[in-house]
Every structure is written in structure tokens, then in C-alpha cells.
Length: 430
Image (cartoon, rainbow, N blue to C red; front, side, top):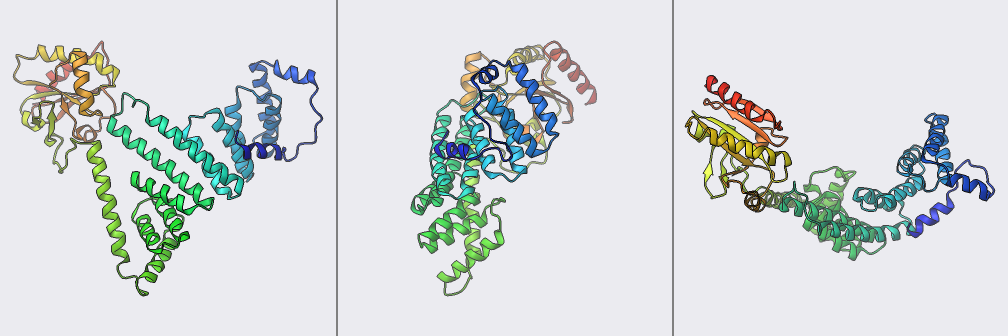
């Protein structure tokens, strides 16, 4: 545990606990030999006796932890202690037990962020020093995470965006800790880095605060305008920030706020363009123009050709949505191909595979490695339009264009017969 929390641990006795003599060696040995079942029974009694009263439960749980410092129930106990300390407005214990949870789960980024928030709320020198250390540790953890291989269900583009968002968060905490620690120049560097990666109103507002400390009024106004152009709810008083930024703008423009609104709009357009570029990177094949029907989506095949389901109006179309990371899809696909061959001589029936939730760089190698046909289409937003929320999902479309059947998921025993039944029904429906 970090130094300031060690100090807190030593300085926080249970609020109403009487002084106790050192536990005899025999008692300590007995506690150490208690089985998990015995500990669980004792813990249950403590909870029952407290009857939900935060102070009583907190004191009982802390006695239990002193007796069983290595209990398997530590995670559950720390969660309860945080809840009770919060109810009792005991900020020191809230911090202490959040830190202990962070020790239990050192790779939990969310828990580390909770601790950082609590440290920065304290404002005292020890907490700020620890926040700076923890923020640097968070950044190192994020970089280790970013070096990992993306999970199978996530494209490299999505992974890179998510990792940059984590980097932006780490930079923002490093900046906040530097600002609290009296180093506004260093804080500016971190806030600017955070905003380059992922614009957010909190980092922008804090950048403005840091610039003000450096007497850089124009830069502060620019940062505040950016904060006001961004959506969100982390700024406690947007109207107060508006008034503050407007007054600073007027100082720079002979007492007039004329043009301040234009500055905010310019910032909005800047962020909108940045967001649009990110979305294009994440969804390179996304339909960019509105469509009247799902059948009008333009989907590209791996050979570069464009396709629309509307082109198959008058036929029965079997559309299978799949992804490289979907294990059931790997079992389903050979059956889908068998059905496709079975109906190859029937000009009324068409089979289409649509890859979704992947990027092309993952699809081609996967098809080659599994010796599958490369005639799949790349999703362009069609799956979202149709509300496809599980894979595989297979649609059977009637000649009229109406969706005659939707099979979400995959049952190996019945898939072929279910599809054939749906094809017959679609043919009768017309």
C-alpha cells in the first residue's frame, strides 16, 4: 500500500471500539486455523447482529478483518465497508477501503480511477502526492493494456480507439494531479494530450484553469469555449463557466463579448469533424446516405463489388450474419454452405453471408485459414438497422421483400430443417 494510506490505516481506529490488549498468541493461532466455513458463519452473525445499521456493521467488519486479515471474503467486506463509510460520511475510510480493493485487483482500471478521484477530492498534500504517483501508475497500466492483442470480437480500429480513450483518461488524471500539486505548466501538457486523444469537457475546463494560473488568458478562453461546446455533465455549473469565460473574453476584446458565441460554434464544428473522422475509421463501409428500406443498404463484397438486397427482389433470400470471433458461426457456416449447394439449381433462392463486427483485415485471413468461400459481404450498418443483436442470426426474405423468418442464434440439430421450412413458407408468402 502507498505511504499515505499506510498512515491513514494507523490513524483510523474503529470509532467506538474500546482499547484492546494485544491478542494472545493462542487466540491468534486459533483465528489463523479457522476454516473458511467457520469464518463465513462468524461473518454472517456479524451481519445479522448489525441489522443493517452502518456504524454497527462497520465496527463488526473491522473487528473481523483484524481477526482474519487474509480472509477469502475480503472483497465482499471491503465493498460493505465502503457502503457503510459512505453512509456515515467517513471520507477517510471510503478512501482506505477503495485502496484496499485496488490492491486486491491491481489490474482493475475502474477501481484505480475511483481511488484517484477520491485522492483528488481530498486536496491535502499527502493525497495529492499519492494521486500523482497513482496517475503515473495508471498510465503505465494503460500502456501495458494497449500492448495486448485485441480480443477476438473487437477489430483493431475499435481497439485503438478504446485504448486512446484510456490514454486520454490517464492524461487527464495526470493533469489534474499536477494542477492540484501546483504545477500548472505540467498540467497543461497533460490536458492538451488528453484533448488530442479524446475531447471531453472536464479536461477542457481544467486546461482553462491551468492556463489561467499561468496568466494565459487567451488560451484559457479558448479552452473554456471548447468545454462549453462539448456535451456532458461533468461541469457542475455550465452557466457559471459561461459567465466566467465570457468575462475573460470581454477582457481581451475591449469589454465586448461579441464573437464569443462564434468561437464556441467553431469549437463545436472542430469536434464534430474529429468525431466524424473517428467514425469513418471505425466503420469504413458504413452507409453514409439515408435509406428508405433495409434492402437499399449498399454492402461491399471482398472483390470490391457493391450489392443491395433490393437487387434480389422477387427471389427468396437467405441472409446469414456472422463474425470471425463467433464460435457458433463456425459450426453453422458449413451447414449454411450445404444448404446453398442444395439450392444451387433453384434460381428462386439466393444465399448471402454478411460479415458484421469485423474489419476486412480480419475477414480475409479468417476465410483463408478456414477454407471458406470468400463471397461474403461486409456489413455497412445493415445489422444495426435490422436490430441484429446476437450471432449468428439468419433471415429469410420473401420475394416481396418482407422478412419471412428470423433465426437468432443457432441450433445445430434443427438449423437446416428450420431454414428449409422458412424457405417454403417464404415461397408461399410471395
